[in-house]
Image 1 (cartoon, helix red, strand yellow):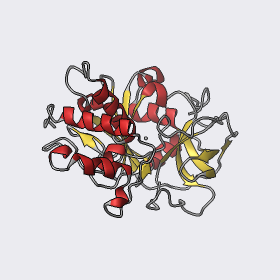
Image 2: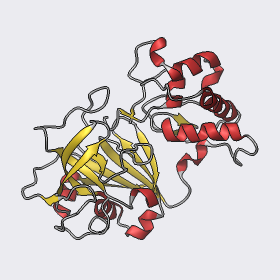
Image 3: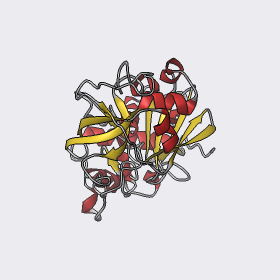
Length: 304
């Protein structure tokens, strides 16, 4: 990552023969705790940290198209960092981080209260273009933190298949049951958070008027949003790590369907790639992905 050179497995990512990356909360104290208060995650107690080193970089908060950039050092001065320990799903081991509770950071960055933020839609963007869409009601209810230092290493331990640097900010979740990255995304190299109080921007990845009776294409859309939207876009909505899949040409207009399906399952049968294979996708899943892409070829939206 840059931030997630690989959260999850990008199924449709595969369709384009391009590398994807896989792999987008603390109750009371975290939910609006006052500076200096110690957060207490459900898995491992956090400890407040004394001297906090300066961290270079900034984080941009965009509310309804209006950006506000804050230095990470400013966020650190406004909150007391805590030490957390998590079962990290990418390192696949226990890790200790110095971190800030995410909720107070969002309240400060957006200048909004918790209730309004929980009703919003967010897209977490990494420096390399990886994007994670998530609803406020899921992101802002629980033990989630912005980690800014790896306490087990002098600098950040490389992460993901490409050995990326997850700094300066890595989103981590604390507590049992938070290892499923499809439900609880862990994007790293976080650089920008885009928020909208209206419908999620990713609605443009679905056909106008919905799917009607095309249940197969609707299932393919669900797979795309869950596993591929992080890296790839449809109608210019989604991640920027991989190529656009629908405009100006739909990927199935220049790649044979058989090749697309085979590439999704195992990219290395075509060429060496940083993209992981997707052996868990069934033929039914592949049928759904293809049905979705074919449907979207008739709904190309080139507007910015």
